[in-house]
Image (cartoon, rainbow, N blue to C red; front, side, top):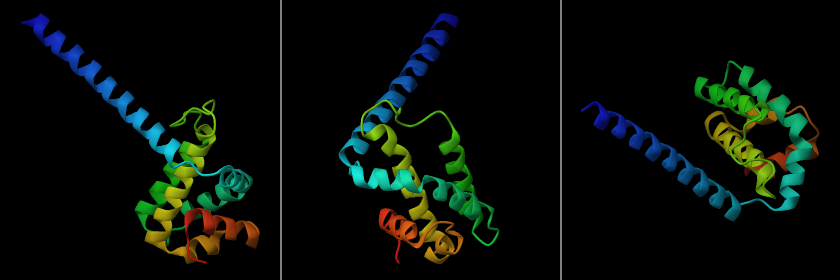
Length: 140
């Protein structure tokens, strides 16, 4: 009886690990198919210092909904974490995953808090804001 219980537990663990690996592979394929062009990735990487300041300012803004602020703090934690969804050594999408995650969270922020909040907290140049608006499909 005890042996059957251990076998079931091991089988469940192996199944869960296989499921996570399959989901990760699906994510990599989706990102490969939907990867941004090199220009977008370069533009996003140039904006990174301003984006980090923007995310921190937005996350600290008490006028924004709590869910938005939590998402922004989680995004900041993800960006400073050495663990990525897609390792950086994978060509093209290795660095693009950060840009895609930032764009998705900022799109979500704009939908919930409005484009005015992002514009109000933008620390960079007007050209940088225009690039950010283009990358996140934010209204001008």
